[in-house]
Length: 402
Image 1: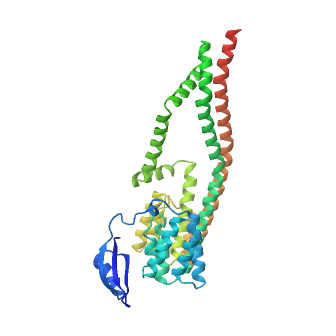
Image 2: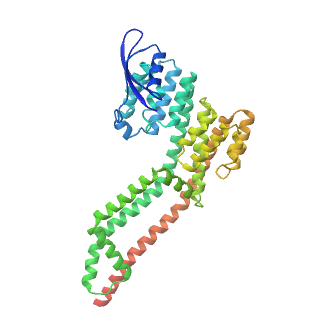
Image 3: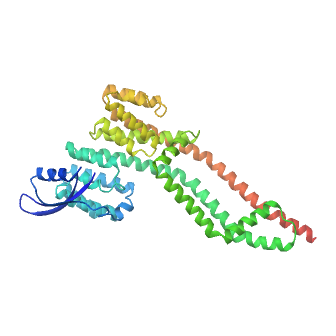
C-alpha cells in the first residue's frame, strides 16, 4: 500500500508532520480530514526515502520476544503506549530496534497506529506480527493480543534454540573434518609429495590423486573460494525465487526421511500461527490467508491460500482442509473437527502446535543419535585412506633403498 507524507495543523493550531498508508492520495486526505486536521501539504513518499540499515539487517527473535513481553506488561500496568515505547527504546541493546521504537513512539504521539509504523519494517516485523497488533488496536485489546504474540514468539525462540543445540555437535564435527582435511592437503601433503617424487619410485593411484588435489588447492585456492562463493550465492538467490522455492519444497516433501521433519515443522508453524491469529480476533478467512503468506514451506502456503478461498465461499473449515489431505494428516482433521464443534479452534490448534513441536524435537534427537556413529565412521575411513596414501609409498621407497 502506498505511503504519503503530510504536514497538518491540529485542532490547537499546532503544525505536525507525519506519514500515512492509504490506497491513494484522495483516501489519505479523507482519513486525515476525518480526524479534524487541516492539511497544508501531502505528497507520495519518495521511493527509497527512509531506506536505512533497519531494512537491510534484522532484529533477533529474542529481542522481538522481549519487546512484546515488556510492552504487554507495561500496558497491563496502565502505562501509556508512547511512554512504554520510549522506555523500551532506551533499554534495548539493539540499535535497530532502538531506532524503530523511537520512530514508533513519535508516530503514535502524532496519531499514527502502532501497527502502521511496524508495517514499514517488513524485514523486522512479519505479517503475523503486524496483523496481531492491528487486530488488537481495532478491537481495543492490544495488551491481550501482545500477550498471545509474546507466548508464540517465546515458543518459536525456544524451539529454535533446541534445534540449534541438537545440531551443534554434528555441525562441529563436519566443520572440523573439512578444516583438518584442508590443512593436511595444503600444508602436509606438499612436503610429503616432494620426498616421494624425489625417490623416483612409482606411486599408487590414490597417492597421485591426493597429490594432484593438494597442488590444485595450493595453486588455485582463489578459484576454489570463488567457485564455493558462487555456488552459495546461486543457491541463496534461487531460494528467494517463488518458483524454485516451491520446487524445493515439493522435492523435500517427497524425500523419504526428510519429508517427516519437513511436514512436522510445517504443521507446527501452521497450527501455532493460525491459533495466534484467531485468538487475536482476526476473521478466520483472513487468518488462514495471512498464515499462508508467512509459511516458509510454499507448498503448505499455497494449500492454505486454497483453503482460505473455500472457506470464503462458505465451505466448512474441516471440509476445506480435508481437500488437502495429502498435506494435512487425519490427526489435524480430527482435532479441527473437535475444535469446530466446541468453538475452540484456536485452543485445539495451539495443542497441535505443541504436539508437532515435541514430535519434531524427538525425531531430530533420534536422527542426531544416528548421524553421530556415521560421522565417526566417515572420519575413520578418511583418516585410513589418507594414511594408506602416504604410508604405502613410504614403505615402497624403504623397500627400494634396502
